[in-house]
Each structure stands twice: as C-alpha cells, then as structure tokens.
Image 1 (cartoon, rainbow, N blue to C red):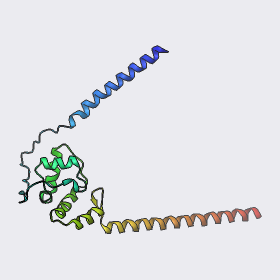
Image 2: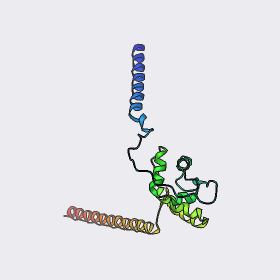
Image 3: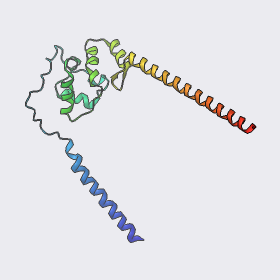
Image 4: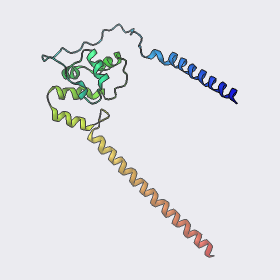
Length: 179
C-alpha cells in the first residue's frame, strides 16, 4: 500500500511539473508583444494644454491604476489630452502597456471632456448612466422594459392557454367516465 501511495504522489508531481512547463511554453510569451511591423508612425497626441500637472485619470469610469499608468506612459496626463485623443490612440496606449481589455474606452473621451470643462454635474449624470463603463441610453432602457413587459404578457397568455387545455381535458375525462 505504501508503494502505491509513493508512486501516486510521484505521478501527480510529475504531471504538475509537466503542466507548468507546457503552460509556460504556451502562455509565457504573451506578455512581450512582438515588435510591430507596421512602418506607419503612430498618430501624434494633441498638444499639451497650457496648464501644468496631471489630472486624476482614475476618476473616469473604466480607468484603474494600470490603465492610468499606461495612458501616462503614452503621454496622456490630463483630461484635455484624453478627451482630444481618438479611440485608436487610447487603444494603442493601453496595448503598448500590455493591456488588452477596455470595454469602456469609447466613453472615456466624453467623460474626460466634461471633467476638463469643469462640468461636474454633467460628469455625474453621465457616470450614473454608465453600466460597466458603457453608456446605457434611456431609449435602450425603455426598449428593454417593453421587451420585459411583452415577455411577461406572452407568459401569462401561455399559462392561461395551458390552464384552459387542462380544464378541457379534465372535463372530457369526466364525461368519458360518466358513460
């Protein structure tokens, strides 16, 4: 019995080490992106605004510490610069830092513009509408509510039809037993 346990532990350890090796070979190289073969120069960032310093880019929904660091490394330090940069420039900045997922990137420009202009009320209104950094339009909310209502009505109608069929079947059985 002891021999079996020792052999099992050895096999489990060997499988674990093999898994680590294969994982390293397959996924280990993803951190360093290959140099771009694109010879086109990246789009120039907008000129720096007159004021100096850095804005707290993390105030924008969808930008955390890593995204903010990636944007700063690309030369985007203020809300004005972020608002003036196009989506491709923003995406290139975060991809250059090895980050790939930014679903809220399309709303960063609007959020940054409101903050750069000092429109705190507009910024709060926009961020309250955002779900996971994406803008949920009132029309889309109304359409979703209408779909839910239509689905509920269809379910109620189906339940009523099923109940009517069950009653008809029960009545037919009772009539058949009465004969």
